[in-house]
Image: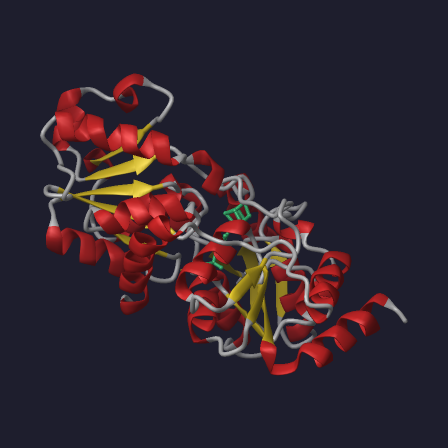
Length: 351
Ligand code: 13P
Ligand code: SF4
């Protein structure tokens, strides 16, 4: 039997007991077996609604952790390759975040109850950081509801600490009319984040110094170049791209939204997209020849950690489930789960 036949057979055998979730950055050979595809917001909803016993998450570690937090206690979440992490999520460690919060509290800017500052973490963070935010009156957001989460945070406090993606935080706050002079970047490797007390006191938004190495490669000159080459082309980008790129773009959105923008455009439309290359290549094939979709830069950016999930890993995980063995289970500790769930439930309430 070929690999594809083996995966299909294992899925058939597991039937309704198993749901395979696939993030849009997964390669074609993997995503073809997903029962549901989506951005991280949609996939976390799918995990929360899953009925069967097994949730096989073809995505990265923080997504599988969130699925475990949101699913029932009797359900099991499997990540086909444990090396599928996220370099951005790795840029914030819980001890660094606790340390930052203590320093901000020492300045009188917040407290353990989160008075004065709302902590908001992007989905791309560990469950421990989600729990940290939940316990201090904060929330999780994704790229599709970051604006709603900022409104939510500002309704409670004058200041927001945003983790760990400085670009999503900056783009969101800037779009709300908050000037760059009211934002500071906290460097966890420097004393007091590398910031003066007066700057911290005056700031409305404290951005964690984290970024996505995939999206940070897109530059404003790529936008100019592609516009010069293809007159009339629309540039659409993920909000993990830097502010200078987002400001030049015609549209900004989560992976699901970027796909919808292209799918819903009239025939003849041309798009240059600033996000991961597997999504773009798949979409380009789907909409050709009526519409054109290309990568914003020349080379195309690959998320190497998403790419870790291969058909071989998926096959191995599913065949083991058929045999009654759970491999690569992602299980968040109960004490972390409680507050992470609070923060994720708040996220699911925000559109
Ligand atoms: P989405 O929620 O838009 O799918 O983004 C997840 C991600 O990791 C993008 O790099
Ligand atoms: Fe993380 Fe960037 Fe990959 Fe998204 S594209 S999973 S933020 S490394």
